[in-house]
Each structure stands twice: as structure tokens, then as C-alpha cells.
Image (cartoon, rainbow over all chains, first blue to last red; front, side, top):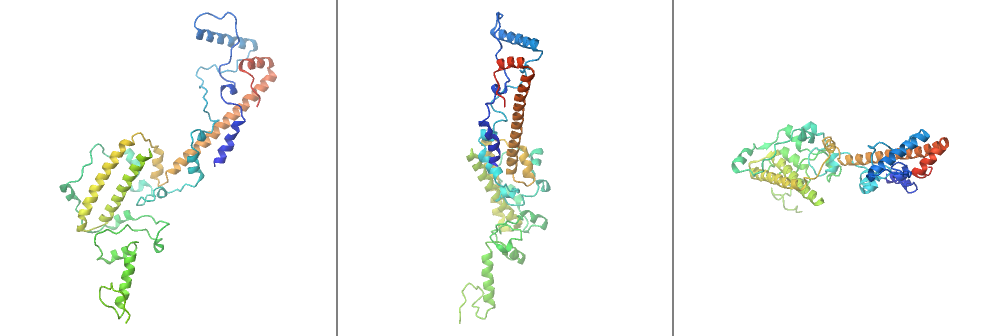
Amino acid sequence: MTEIFSTLFGQNDSQPATGPAALGFGPGKPPQLGGSPPGNPSRRCRQTKRRWRLRFQDSSGMRGLRCENPNCPVNTDLTGNTNLITHYSLEHAFNKFCGKKVKEKLSNFLPELPGMIDCPGIQDGSSLRSLIEKPPVCGNSFSPLTGALLTGFRLHTGPLPEQYRLMHIQPPKKKSKNKYRHHRPQDPLPPETPSDSDPKKKKKKRDDDPDRKKKKKDKKKKKNRHSPDHPGLTGSQPNSLR
Amino acid sequence: MAEKFDNLEEHLEKFVENIRQLGIIVSDFQPSSQTGLNQKLNFMITGLQDVEKCRQQLHDINVPLEVFEYIDQGRNPQLYTKECLERALAKNEQVKGKIDTLTKFKSLLISELGKVFPEEMAKYKAIHGDDPPS
């Protein structure tokens, strides 16, 4: 991609210099006239130029090739003839964004952000546009919650209803450590609180990476229980061959 | 300048992680989780305080609104930067083409006028200087 603008703008070296001198526009040198009027030098110069214009017009019937409009834009050194990306030292940025393929999804830009961030924000009301159109109430200071306020956060025990569980489901990641769960959305890490009584929770916990080792141990324990040489219920002792 | 962004990024990452853990606790709440929940709620408030402090350092940072549209659509905001650069290059090339075309036209016009109005063009060149034909 850098070759595109380098070849395009590489012709500037052989081209004549830009600016008013090359383009031929701009204030030229008026011919010297005898008997210049007295008074202010700038006024004298303007009057001289006006006379020159009239003479030029009268002799040939053709108006001079110069811009007489006082509102003409001022000639600047920086024009479209210059490679602006090079001028503003943006080659690195250009190669970074345009040279390589930029991934489409937002999750590629923020891989560590949890949740389904690739979905449009309008669907779940989490769009930034709504935040701009309806800004939240600001100005109040953040103060920690007191004991009385925290009593409002006493929750019912048990799992969330099905309709709210989807919020914690993350999109399937390509580089998942566990090869057997690449087709399932990953559930969040289990909480630290003991909640191993329900069989459904056991099934969910089997899908998590940290608990997989525990399940392997459980399977081994079960195998040991079914064997006639099982020492006890704990099953932590290694099998002993008799 | 990068330090200001690093500081804010760090605070936001901690905040998001705290919220994520809060969601895990809430997803399967137990009575013994109450103290942890309260702690996470207060961490959330201190996290917001930290982000509020970072705001003063970044008051001069301007974000184009078009980027928000990309984010709302679930697209990578770097695509906006990429498209800006591509549009700038395309416009640059377009304007350079116009300049080159007008330069060629000007030299061609001078040469043709020199053929039709040789005396007048001689006067013109005497005033403006000799323009080399392209």
C-alpha cells in the first residue's frame, strides 16, 4: 500500500517547484512608469497597478492573466500536491492499519472484555449513542454504601432465572484450552461459595477448566469404589494391589 | 500521554473484572456470599471513583462520534481509523490529479495563446516571467 502513494508522489522531485512562481499567478512586477503620483507608497503602488491593468487591457483588448479578485485564496506551500501522510509522519500508522488486515469484530479489539460485545448495542440498550442522547445524571459524588444501604442488596438464594442467564454467556473463543468444548459457549468461572449439592451444577462445573482435573479425580474415585479392592469412602488413598 | 491512557485502562480493566465477578456471585447466590457481594459493590463504587479521577487528566482528548457508531454495531474501531486514512489518501490523490491537470492546462494554454497572440504573450511573459512549457 505504501508503494501506491510513494510512486504517485515520487514525481515531485522532477517537477518544477510549486507555488506562485511556477503557476504564474500572483502579483507580478508592474512596468516602471514615469511620474509616479506622490503620497502613500502603498496607495501609489495600487494606483500604478491599476494603470498597468488599464494599459494592458487597452492595447490588446485582452484582460491580463492575473487574479484581480481580492478574495482569492492565499497561496500556501502545503497543497494536495504534497503527500500529506508523509508530511504529517503517518507512514507507520498507515502501514499498521492499511497494510495489514484489520479484524472486523469488536471482540478482536477487546479480547478480554466479557460478554457478547459483537452484538449491536441497540438490541440490549447498551449503545453509546443512547448514552449521548440521554446522558445519565452527573454531578453527584460517589460515596460507599453504608450498612443500611447494603441491606437492599439481600438477594434470594439459588440460580438466576433462564432469561437472565444468557447475559453471562460468552461467545466461543477459537483458541480454547479445552478441545472438547469448542462448540459450546463457555460458562463463567464458578463462584467460590460452596454450591456442589445440585447435579445440574455438577454438570455445569464439568465444563470449566479448573474443575476438569477435579472431575478426573472423581472418575477415578468412582472407579475405585466399584472395584472389589476399594479401601473406603474417601477414595483418596491409591489403589493397592493385593 | 500514554501513561494517562494506561492508567485509565488499568482502572477500567479492574472495574470490568469486578463487575464480572459480581455477576458470577449473583448468578448463583448463596447466603454465605452476602459479605462478598457487599465487598464487590463497594469495590464497584471505588472503581467509579478512580475512573472519575482519571477524567480530569483526559479533558483535552476528543473522540469522533463516528467511532461510536462502529462500536455500537459491534465493529472494530480501528476500521474507522483505517477508513479515515484511506479516504485521506484517496482525496490527496484526487486533488493532486486536479493540480497536475490544471498545470498541464495552463502550460498548454500559454503555448496556444503564444501562437495566437504572440506580442501580448511576450508582454505577459515579461511581466510574469518565462514559464517553462510542460
